[in-house]
Image (tube, rainbow, N blue to C red; front, side, top):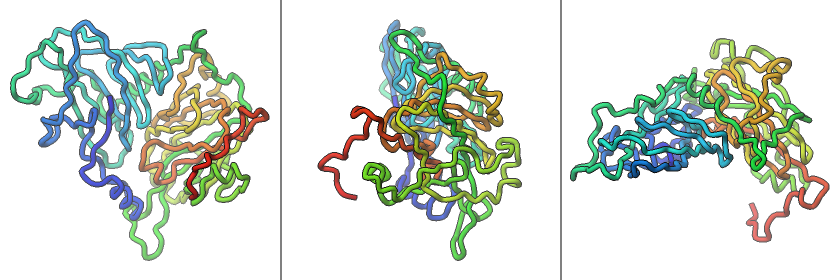
Length: 413
C-alpha cells in the first residue's frame, strides 16, 4: 500500500523554481493511497481506494511512504495494526492504533478483519507536522470494505465523520516517539541482531537548515530575501560532475575530498537557541567532502538536529548498508552520558532513521560493503538544498571484499 503526494504541476518544474529563487517549494495538492486521493479532495470521489476484505481473515499490508516531503501517519478506523517488519527486516511484533512512516521507509503490518461488517471503515493518511514552513494541510482517505457489505450504484459517499478517531493529530510528536521506541529487532537464533557492541569510529554531525546571502543582482525568495540551504556539519553537499564511485575505483581522487568533518565545527546549544536571531548568518560551506573508512569498520554516526531556522524531524537514509538505531533522544547529544543508555541487545535495523525533532539519533553500521555510498535526508527539498554527504568503504584484503569493476557496457559520462 503506497502513501504519497500529488502535484497538479510538474514536479521537476516545482523543484527547478525552488532552486532558481532559493525559496521553499510549492506544497503538494493532495496526498494519496495507492495513487488515489479520495473523496476529501474536490472532484475525487471516483478516485478512491476501496479495499475489500473477508471477515475473520488476517491481511498483510505492505505500507510504503513514497511522498517527497512529508512524514505521514496512517490508521484504519476501528482496527489495530500489528507491526512485523520495517525496511525489509523483521521486528518483534507489537500492536498499535496507527503508524508513523517517513519518506523512504517501509512498514509491514498485519490487520485482522474482526469488525462487524456494517458499512465501510475509513483508512487515512495525513502529515506528521514538525515544520513551521507551509505544508499540505490535508488528508487522504480510502475505505476498508467487508465483502458482505453491499454498495449502491453510487460511489462511496463522504462519511459524516470522515477521519478515524485513532488517527494521530498532525503535531503528535508523543505518538511518533512512542511508536519509534517500540521498534525492536527479533534478535533470535534464526534472525540475529548483529549490532556492533564496540565501535572503531564515532562521527557526530549536525543536520539542519540554513540561509545563504543572496548574490548581487540575484532575486532570492527565501526567508529575509535570502536562499534556503541545508547542511551536515555546516557542509552543504555539491554533487560532482564526475562519478565519485568511478573516481574512487580508478584512484583518481578528483571531484571530491575524503575529509568530511567528524564533529561539528562549532560547539553550542544546537537545539536550545533562537532559530532565527542567533543563527541567521550561518552561511554553509559548499563542498563534496566524504567520510572514508577501511573495510569492516564498526562505525557510529550521531545525527544531531539543530534549531537552524526550524527544528524538524529529518528522515536520514544511508545507501548500501542497513544500520542499527542504538539510541534516540531530545535535546543535545551528550557523548559522555547518552551512550550508557544505548540499546545494544535488540535495536531496530533499518536503512532510514527519522531523527527526532529537536533531538538526535545514533546509528551503528558494519561498513562491509565496499564502494561509495550516499547519505541524505529523504525530504527531497532538503537533499536538493545540500543536506547530504557520503562515505567511502575501502576494499578489504579478500577478493570477496573488493569493489567490483564497472560493467563492460557502462556508458561514458
